[in-house]
Image 1 (cartoon, rainbow, N blue to C red):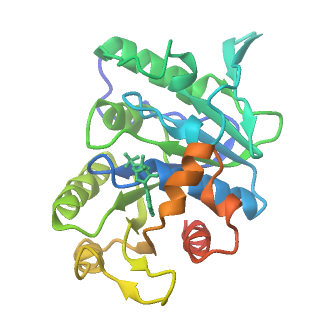
Image 2 (cartoon, rainbow, N blue to C red):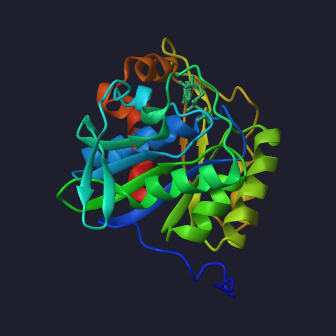
Length: 266
Ligand code: ADP
């Protein structure tokens, strides 16, 4: 068939999901997966039915953070074809390319058509359970690459959350991210500034370790919301390794409250 004149005409809704949110970042290591996982967990705590899809095909870490690393994945036949059944952890339905890879240490080289096929299956052929999902949180790979473009052209996404740290270098990539989402016509819900500041546990004094943040200024310049700021909390990493989202492990902490606020804003 001739190519569609509008590349977005081919977009489809992800079945059985009310609201699809992607979590993106300009570069790796800013806490994108941490934010995605805790956003999912915060929405779960608010009483929503939530799914989490790790689409970071190059470094899927979500299942570990959600304690779902060793879950078995089953498939089911339907008249429309096979579907993969999403296992559940902490009450969240989890799906990840990591489930299907031979081992955590195996680097995967994705060639265009294979990437496209895998991603399409993860978007459209997952059984998220009998009840419709209120939210599906999709954890994207960092940057502005093939996965983002493919996703933008194949699925209807309701909004994007962009994660950054306060440093200038990270903010340059935020600008690129904003431009990309504008180009693929995905509404930007806002920016999350992660590792914003550190609160000394003994004195309560706040340290802006990366200097005065310019995120708010960048957000304003682009007409994008600042959804919230998350402090540096060493225990976040600790609980990630244990497979418990921080908002569930330490529900009364300031950091958990920061994540809950962000969830209320999406
Ligand atoms: P990305 O997905 O952007 O590559 P990750 O979510 O994997 O980043 O986070 C990178 C590292 O930083 C992880 O070890 C994670 O536990 C840690 N981290 C993320 N957010 C915070 C935070 N607010 N405080 C402390 N450590 C954090």
